[in-house]
Image: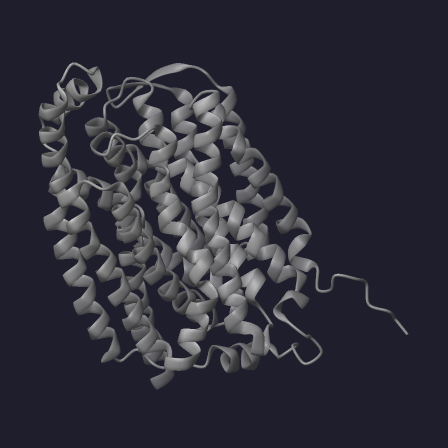
Length: 436
């Protein structure tokens, strides 16, 4: 009974943590067009917002694992929140001088803090209960993540954008302003981030200290994983001896990359159809609302009705179909008063299958690692750098073809996910074991 209460309390804290993850991460969808205008960037340059933010996952995942091993779970989480707060505070001087490179430094620090938190939180959610229902628990915290993702672009837009900004954006991009007048307007625009990011940084600092002294238990993820499934690591020399783990990290890479492309590019894509940023801000929320619906369905269906592996097969296939529709369909429609292309709605609908893909990949990749659990978790977190790489590839293709043409990058992503769902997760050895 005490263990059950502890687990419930831990899940509540973890759910709130995932809410924070979502609030901080998904605001990038509006930061991209915001920085593009205020810092005078090309579309390709603006996607360095996601690159700087998510490349930290690749660089800092293994150091994060080492930190958690040295200082423990709770202290590590506190450190993660402190680093995130520092990144938020960097936005203040960056806004004062309107220096995009300094903003990227702040985003990298925020990503570093999140890398530590994700390295700690994801395996915790996976092993806090039976492995066969891990996708359901990930769906629960995922709902909190996506609720935050739905409201964060709207809150951010409400705080930093004014009703008359649409005309100001058109004036800036018209090229009719003299340099002094334009710089005065852009300086005023970029400095609107100072107060919200200073407040958010302080809130993260306080929550990090709260975690240190909270009832969240210290756990040994390696011991818990071994107890729940058995330790198969005795004859393995390294974490790379687990093909399903390595293939799972690649699956994470392609999944999160395709997801962030579908969300963080949607405002610019809507803009190419004549929808200004003040109106287009709602489209990332539509995508994340579809994702939240997928999570809710997962909670009720996994594992009672369908297995984690079956959910992965279905969702990866549906993602492939929606990707093809997004790049091939060219039909004008009116949606809630917006004159857009139907392909934009297929892009938003991709949030639905994307919900259960991540929730299914993680437990299929992390099971039965024994003493390699923490480093294996770090490897999976490194896969989150797909969020950094894929938008850059999209931006490169889109700048040379079209916004819609850039979405061809989604097709190979979902083809790989289908491979992992059908075969990759079952590969236990790189070479067939001898029967002798």
